[in-house]
Length: 224
Image 1 (cartoon, rainbow, N blue to C red):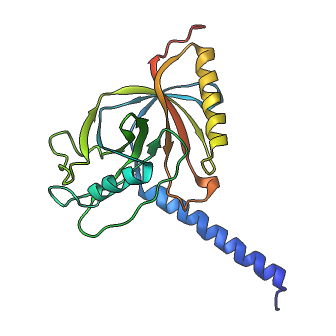
Image 2 (cartoon, one colour; image 1 turned 180 degrees about the horizontal axis):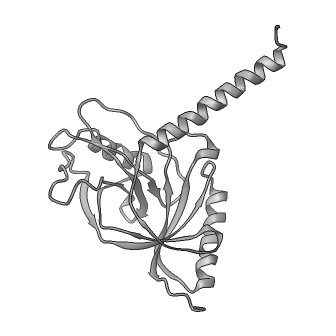
């Protein structure tokens, strides 16, 4: 029996949606995540996490795209051993700004997410978190002088998680919810908020994982 065109279109859209969802699941499962320990779960899904010592590859540029490029080239083989560095999620930025990437040839260093970015007086700071298999002595040294290797001490972060595409609106809404939840518990923070994104731009919005993090000074609530 021949199906009517509205049913055919509906079936095609369903198949495309299924494939899009499957793509998001496969990509998410193929990328490792930076490790952490959940110490406590608060209201509104806020988590208090302990992060271990990390190694960052960092750079500073005029904008986020220009900062991303040398770091991506570094993990793609632009280092002393032409080694590929596997990617680790999430990517970390201070604001909801998309970043574009360009592939390169040759042996690569797998990338570890997140990528960390923030603004400073010199421009846009960005960092890729390196895989845990490296220490400060074994990490390949960058070929470019624009990329630096940095050791980050263990720290505690308060995070809130949400889905969908990143917009200024949902960024501000969730940052406000995170801040209010911590205020009620009497938990103090320092530094700028970090936006952590775990997916590439093609992952469907309902499968996306976004988090906002604030570094904790103390995590002892006043009402305990």
